[in-house]
Structures are given as structure tokens and as C-alpha cells.
Length: 340
Image (cartoon, rainbow, N blue to C red; front, side, top):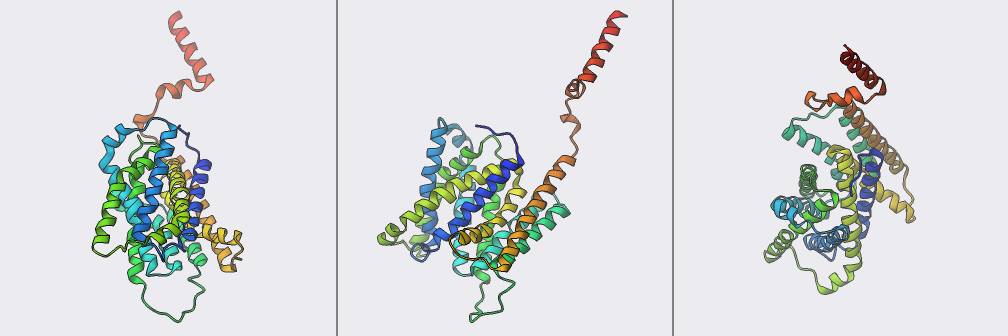
């Protein structure tokens, strides 16, 4: 199934993805004290891989040829995007505080633009940088970092914050890789990258467990956590990743990562729906994030519309014959030449 490029549809996909990922934090919170983040990641993507493959099989024959052709690249991208990102962010947050994690996640659009500038030579425009900083300020307000005036504990969270930040680079690499495999559609790329990377995730988990770095969860802990793991493996992971990759294909990498600012906002909104009344600074932060996303998306559309078309891409026959009047003039000129 193919879809024509539509900004509205792309924005809807990104909003659904970020909302699903926001629910992940709420669903995983009671699980993490009993299941190590590395094993949590493996169990999550074991369920997700089955879900991805089921979706792919329901659509039609499985694309084994694409898996053989791009197997190693898909495995590497899935490992850094699914495994490294998830595990390192969870490990980092275990040694930090939620407000820091929200701000770190919100730095991904800026990091993505800097990576593109360093690797691709694409310098971000002023509107893109300004809208990203506006959304980042909104996330900081939502997190409550600007309203906190110290506390009883002043232990450094630098190690945890740096670990979480390093993990975000894995998702940026995964997003860039998705954009560089246009021959694979959203469902195929998501499913095949999960399938190809699962052996690497399993091997890495067992290796860390052997060295005592990833304690094996008890059978009772795994059994008690299975409802949350099934939800997380299917809704935020399968549905969220499919919706996110679809939005990236519609709107591009930079705009896709800009919508990650909405993840902490979605946590706030879901909490409000569950009866938690948002504070004034949280509502103000939501308005800033939404404004930043709108400005960013509009600036990207204007920039795309003003981008010059290379001469080799101009269809001269289409330019001449697309309008009825030039087509009639061309017919009249041919009649005159034939009559003469």
C-alpha cells in the first residue's frame, strides 16, 4: 500500500506515535523496579518482532529478498534504534530524574540538525533552530525544571543524563537509516529491522547477563509484568514505530524528530485524562511545544516550496503541454508550418 505525500497525514502519524510513546513511560514505570532495563528491552522487542511480522504477513508475502539484500544494514539499524536507544535511555533515567529525561529527549531535534550539518553539510535555517528552541523551552516548562528550587538530595545525575543522551544518538541513526532505504516501505523497514536485529539484542543481553551487568528477572517478576510488556510491545512499539516511520517518510527526518518534543506533553495529557490536574507551568509548556511544532512544520513546507528545481529534473514537454492555451498555440504553429 502506498500513500501520496500529505503534511496533514504525516503530522497525524507523528502525533499518534508520540502519544503512544508517552503512554510507554506510564506503563513501564511499575515494571522497571522488577525487570532490568536490558531484559525489559529484549522482552519488549521479542513481542514487538512477532507483532511486526504478523502485520507484514497479513499484508502479503514476506519480503525475504529484501532481508537478504539489506540484512546486515537492517540488523545494525534495528540494534542501535531498538536496543541501544531503549536500554541506554532507561538505564540513564534510572540514575537521573524524569524532568532531566524529558529535556534530554527534547534535544533530539537539535542533535539531528547538528548531525546533518556535520555529516551532510545541511546547515539548519533560522526558523528551524528557533522553533526547535521554542519547543525545547516548552518541554523544560512541562518538566517543572524551571519551578524547582532545590531539594533534599543534590547528588549528581551527570552520569545518568549522559547515558540517556548517548542513547538518543541510536534513534537518530535509526531514523537516518530509514530515510536512506526508500525501496522499503514503512511496514517492511520496521518489521525487517526488528527481525534482523533480534539475534543481536538477544546475544547482547545474554552477554551482559553473563558478566553480571543485566540481572536476570525472576519468573514471578516476568509473570507479573507480562500484561504491561504485551501492551508496551504492541502499542507503543509496533504501532508507535509504524506511525513514526510513516510520518518521517511524509515530512522528513528533521520534522519527525521535532515531534519527539510532544512525548512529555502526551504524558501530561494522559495523566490529566486519568485525573491528574496539570499545573499552570505545565499548560504554558504545552502551548509552547505545540507552537514550536507548528512553526517548524510550516517553515519546512515554505523551504521545500522555495527550493529550486534542478535543470535536469524539468520536464519540458510537460511545461509546454500541461496548460490548454500553450497546447493550442503549439497546434496552431504546427498547422502553419504544414500549410507553408
